Length: 459
Image 1 (cartoon, rainbow, N blue to C red):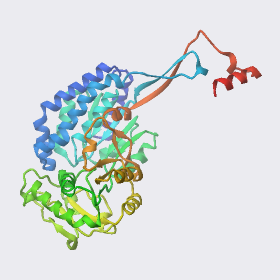
Image 2: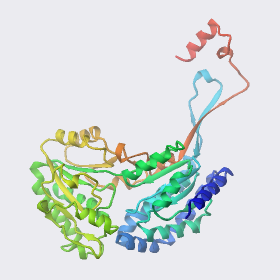
Image 3: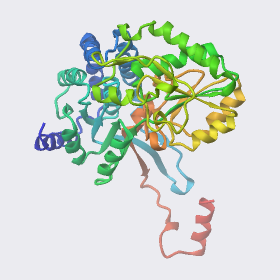
């Protein structure tokens, strides 16, 4: 799509939004129901596309992508009428007689820019929230997952006219053109480097943004943890989608006394979950492209390799890999791994671990395996991170009842459920003042009695 076509598209959406067509709750619900039906009817095509782009099995595609979108749709169809109501608030005595309320209002024309690692879910979930809030949307899926992008374009073109919801495909040129346009809200999921570019462009129009980024999410395992269960859940979270998950445990940070036992259990769990030859496992995914394949292989230190490490360039697969005796100075610890490599580092005290984690950029997620409730509360209170789990990984994002988002370097803003509705909504604060009474105390000329009354009302 050319720059002029994108410009015209944004103009069409703004013209459509200004007619008020997206405001009625009934219109929003109908839009969500159309999308719900289309996702369900195209489930096979969605899963086939995800298989081609990322090697995902049908089970994983439903569990992590299609099913989560359908859950968000069901939640929003049920709750949007309540979310969209005016919310009455208490009026101060000084404003007698008035009615004060907050009016949920859509921002207007939004753009949703999504990544390639969960290309369907991370495109459609924020779109659901944007539509529930009454916005129009321009959707820009990643060029790295072209098969899924094509299915998204097909589904959305069946459900919506382009002035309501439109899909822009393409690569960096199209992204640049979109960011030059004046949108009312920008929702971006991707890398920190591109997130900075999004914010720079948003500043041109002072456009509000949500940034869902990433970072090196730590997985703390202390000496009180259930090691077998921890290993099972860590392996699931780390190697899901071949490690290409923004909230995957980036590295294991365990107490020195249990490191060897933990690594032994991790190896067992890799074999149980992925088999003795993961590269031949039909349900094990693949790296998105050769560029990332080579980048990940370059992070493997052969001297610290204790499990896995084999790869197949033809299928773009890398085995679930474990690196022992890793250090924070290693190359694998200088960037978000975003692949099936698990470096294991050690600490001698929980306070040491907390200080080290807090000395690094704030991660998107943090996981803590422990049987010590006080330790769990201490880590949750003192470490800065977007969200996480105690004694599990990843599952905190799989609910519409909690917002999901980053903190500091891992992003800003949140979505899912009510948090998603709020993200795409501006709450207008309105006082409806009655006309049958007008207290004179605020008007000049000021008098002693007026001052006493003001002091009485404003205490």
